[in-house]
Length: 273
Image 1 (cartoon, rainbow, N blue to C red):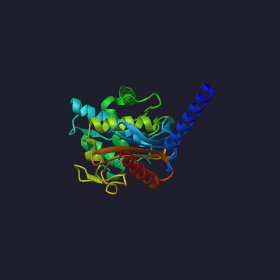
Image 2: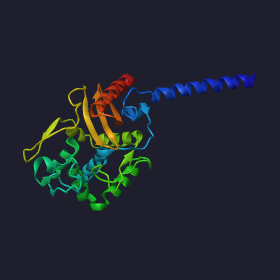
Image 3: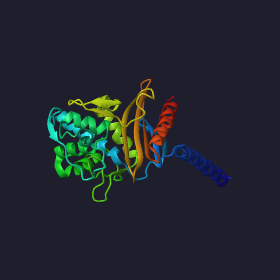
Image 4: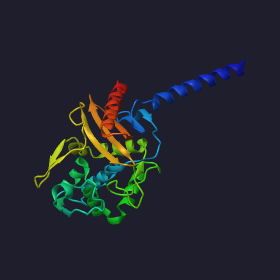
């Protein structure tokens, strides 16, 4: 009798675990890996392939952003400091120089260009200023301090590949990075919420985030794309005092990464009710 009761309990437990698993993985999104998290509760609302190691392209710039803001806070870097843009080996890579033909910029403009238009030369210039060729090591050291797993590895300040190696992470780790960035330096949202910026030199830079102004409370965070990584996006929005973070990795088109994000953020706030 006891054995039969135990068998039924095990069966019920298996079914419940299966149901939970299905709720976590059956997201109707095009992305290979996706998730939405509650910053208020610090928990996942729904996930798909949350531990899968994926290339993350320009999502990498969020770690560079964290370290730039940290350096400014410590007085190791000034917003007004002028730097000459590093020349990129890849002529097809998004660059500030390519659209402006200007080489020298303030740290503030480089920071804005890195976040808003995803300028790779801006990110590489800032990384080089902070720690030269060893900047990726600094990024990986910071990742461990923030509690990211060994599945995350950065190879460049911008997210560009280096000698065939690419920056990789998981949705779980990217949530940790994004939430730490927003919690520690909420001023980052002042920049990522803009659809465009005007630099000190009068250049207008358009955002790569097509969702700005379309979702109530959406104020960030970062796009990414390479052929290997596909279309990626980390979105964040705040409604009625609640903030969610959505992550989309390897969506098949630029349009679908934003459609995926809309679904995730809607689900996030519904799950928060």
